[in-house]
Image (cartoon, rainbow, N blue to C red):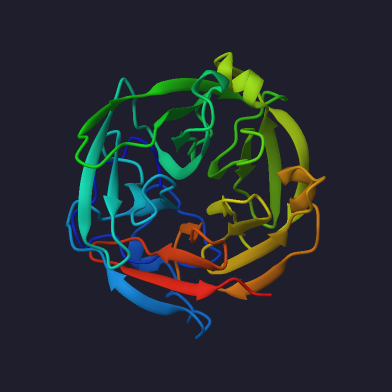
Length: 296
């Protein structure tokens, strides 16, 4: 979605059309209807709070594995929500010191080296439909404890190595190394960019170009399993599962051959704590929460 757009009214932003870019100013009624998901996806609940009207990212908690951390697309304030799988709201947490031009994904993984092994939440302010941003930002904070309503967020500024401004909606954090991966959003090709944990701790800087892979449509979200052995990148209606060997980086794994399955119309996808299943939440108020086993 175009950053800077006003918060959508509840119910006004239904599931996205598949394989179609959101063009600023284009009436939503012009988007083709979504295709049916693979029937192996099961509905396990639906969002209960009208503030969650355009979920763009989801990840399962580490210290709080009973919750899903989610956020809205552009137009909202910098905040995340903790919800249960059935869609009921647990907490709303504001990111103090952050901005929200176009938050597109959320991840969880190691924080700064000085923080040890404690899991941190990462919010990706990386959307740029108009290719107008000279730099993008990622915000991170220790995973909030129950009842915490406000956290201090560390800002990491990033730029692309060739000076070309890109739109991106997929961010991954390597649970093994703490390195960051961003997958750009473009028709038929997914460019991969990385940054080491050391560079993140130094405040960011220029991303490293780490290859690309073919994709049907445009990358809209992704996740890494808690053990780092599986990676998923999705488009509006496909989910791509990649296996990762112990000696591979995430970029190496994304260069492999994936297993692709149809998925519910959505931008958001996450692994369950055991890495055996995915969770996906559609955009729109009171949207459904779906799950399915990762294809073997």
